[in-house]
Length: 609
Image (cartoon, rainbow, N blue to C red; front, side):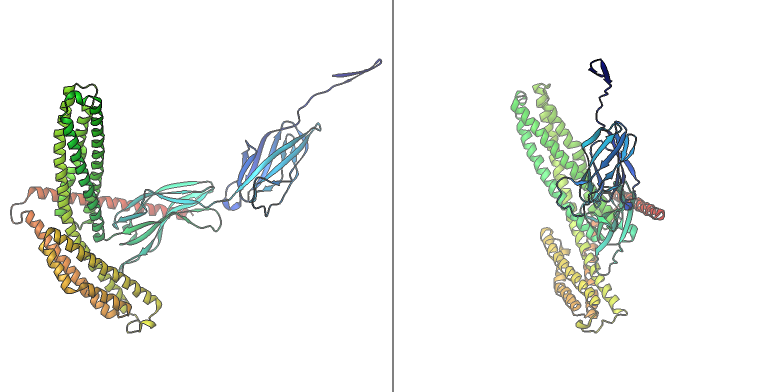
């Protein structure tokens, strides 16, 4: 209370100090563009800034510390470092006052970020809002992203095998659909090209920003035979006209039995090479352990002795881990061989013998050596005990080295026979490819108008197809030359007469020139004579494959004791082999059933749409 006195006059003034009206809370209603199908929502603004998608409509509500009488917002101003300001229109107006709440009109977020200044006056006439601004950042509705997880960039499988992987799709606002699609990128003549197809993994929603889902893809379930496929995950968001966005492509080689056998042979070569490296390393470790064995107990427990023991244990653990990895790769090779069905029993038997040795080494023998070395370095040991453990490690490691060398010998024996069997497979494949050329030419002869027509007058489509056949014929010629060269090297190493005999027949037949002549006739549109020659060479290649196959079967029967009493070991292995094939067949059926379940789910999703 302020009192004024003038003479005997007195006047009192009551004064109530008040803070200026301030904002206690800020809310904004956001309405996204209609194509996004996201319901309008109200957002509490904890900071003076909000990011929204371009085209969104905004209405701000300020809650103040006291009831307001009037207020304004705007004019809006470009905010931040903006390179392009074209299209920006400043806007503003009066705030709609309701007690302590003040609401703006509708503001539209464009490409350019902007700030909204405010000012107001309360019921007592006090002003506020100086330097109070809200900032709006507009963001683009970016394209979604799609990925495949658990799948290499290139994969080779048989038609009945199943690829199991995961599709992951992401978007900044909402995913509409996620799936996987495939298309053919090349077939050999005579093979049916797969129709493009797709699987829907999941339908999303306007606010679903991430979709993950498992996919099981089996070519056989979709009637796809040997060829090359491009497999890609895809995603769609709600942005109009954008369409699908794809992951990086995965190249899937759907193999014939013969091609699959060659892939296995290459992997078997790598396994044997690494197995030999591991055996050499184990032999070097044995040398060092024998040096340690010559030390007395006190020297072993000295600082240098302990370091050497620790290093030996570490190296032994690494080699045991490598053996475990090789064992697993060998197990997969055995499963693939059982699935292939074209690998002969004797080859698989030798592979199984090598695998058994590798299993024993990885699971029992090598860990025991490592354990003895670890115990030798225990600080609580007496010098006598440390010496005993080193001696025991050396004895066990000698057995490990012998077993590893035996495993290498067994693997090499299996590989030698495997290599011989791949020649049969490669000749069969060349014959099959040549028959594919023949089938293509025969289809051209039936109801075709290109027979007897000059090359310049042939329809471009027919000419292109003949060009494709000529390209395939060139590849067959190259494959046959490689077969002859590899067979020559194999015969030089093994001295097996049958390979020399087949090589001699191939050389005398002049198949190289013959296959090249077929290609030349295709280029000239001499399709009748080209077909006759293709048929002849296909028959020759099949004949040579049969000769090699028969000789290998004789060898197998001779080793199994043909004409003598049944070999119980062979009978047991044959039984095990049949069981393996049954298990593999059952697994393939189960996997294809999962694919069909996916198709059913996909059909249901399309019905919902």
